[in-house]
Image 1 (cartoon, helix red, strand yellow):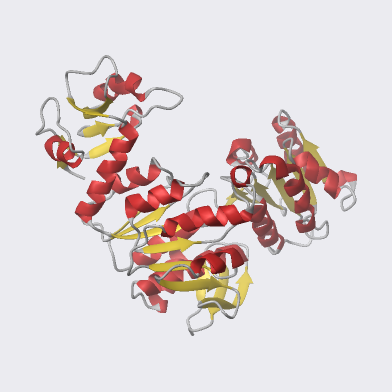
Image 2 (cartoon, one colour; image 1 turned 90 degrees about the horizontal axis):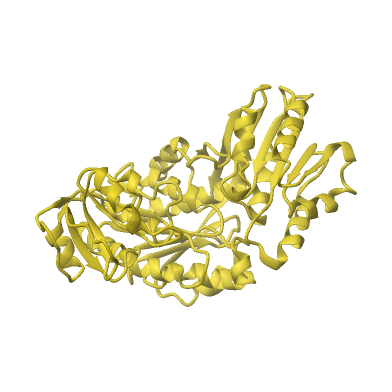
Length: 455
């Protein structure tokens, strides 16, 4: 972006104190990441961002938002006083979005939205100038930041949109007015705040609240909760999944150690993705649907999908110290995601003397249903397929108890949250060169530390 403070002030229907000809080339809310020509946004959370304005100035900030009435307003840079810095940043993002005027693809879902976002961006980058959400910067702060970071020549903006409460996606949809809205699936993520999957589906459908009238809604057709709710929309609809009734559905699927291949119902083209698992094939079919919306050929889409780079820690293979292969999927976790990852991991071939070892950390934000949802994972774990199970965290004790009848004691291991070092030492003593290991848990369980030690 490149705007003078005078234009920013006008966009926010206010005035600028100081030099309104100051040129802004970036926006940041982290004073450590501000650069020359940057506009600092002092957000108020656990720490008050206003306390870091001096640091932002020393790092090159040229201007700042400032909450009206907040003391010690700086006088050595351009300042725009606002009622709320976050709302001002969102309003500025809305203005900049209209100014650049790209086509907007919004993607949400309980699982798979980051991977699908990466796939969609890869597919569309073949023909268009595409800007996408970095990492999973997908909330009421991350979405406007993503918008403000796009280049003026952006033709398609691919936005990942997350939510953990009702109304959040409604607000993001209003901010962005998507031309294409995608829902990957409905799972149990954030069920602590919603209680039942029906309410999760209602909240996910909010992404369509401001879907343009000539837009398209692309969704997982294997989910009855979405089928039912989609009937209320007048926009064009397309589904993806594994049912014959889905607009795009898989007709063949094979998963290998580092990739998966599949075919679809209405094409002779063969597809390959550098990830394993049926759930990632589903994500790829969502990306195929989006690519077709923009006129991409199946050959072009196939080429892009075979080479796309997924965001780190999404079923990413690493090499351990003992020579073992480690699948890291430690950014987030919920029952649907664990079942998908463990099932896919169980399909990976091992050498004759190799074993499959699962290291599972607590799934967070499951509320009162957490004990039952953890214990319920027992039907996904088969001792003949997943040979060793390491469970970590207080909630995983429920799964440990549920597995006692399926696993011999020497193959089932449980550790409390203060026993990570012990678990890592036991793993290092247990793992052999031909073994394969999967790490899966919520980010708050910090299984990335296990990965670092095993490497």
